[in-house]
Image (tube, rainbow, N blue to C red; front, side):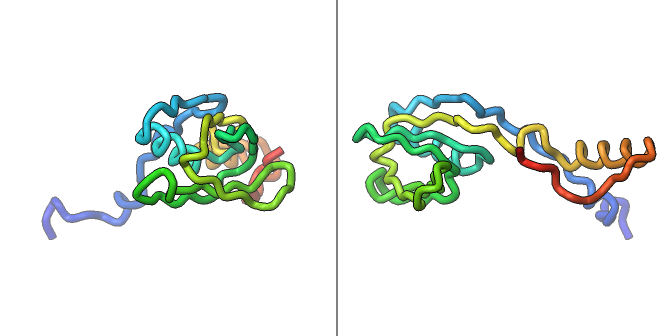
Amino acid sequence: MSEQALRPDDLEIVPGFAHEQLQGWIPPLASEDEIREALEKAFDYRGDVTINRRDGTVIAGYLYDRRSGKSLDDSLVRILPSNGDPRVSIPYSEVASLVFSGRDTAAGKSWEAWVRKYWEKRAAGEKAAIEPESLD
């Protein structure tokens, strides 16, 4: 076995990534590339976004899907409105502006932070459970 061989213990430690702070951001949508990039970030965002359509309607909710086509007309996002209305599909070409309006539920959350809190509770004699925190 060579010194260069991979060890399983080394593979279990994976560096994290920097989570981009998007809450409150209003991206510029002047070009097709900017629209595509902003909607891709909105798809990865774990909070509500608000889309102002070119016809003046406003839809706030969770952007849960996107389909990228050859043009803006055949690309679309799908949103679950926060007011309980049925799901909405919006072509990229109808997006006039976009706001990352809701709280990003993933911000500040990392595996390392969770483990640290877990062991701090255990060390203090508190009950430490493997259950998710409330989103509210």
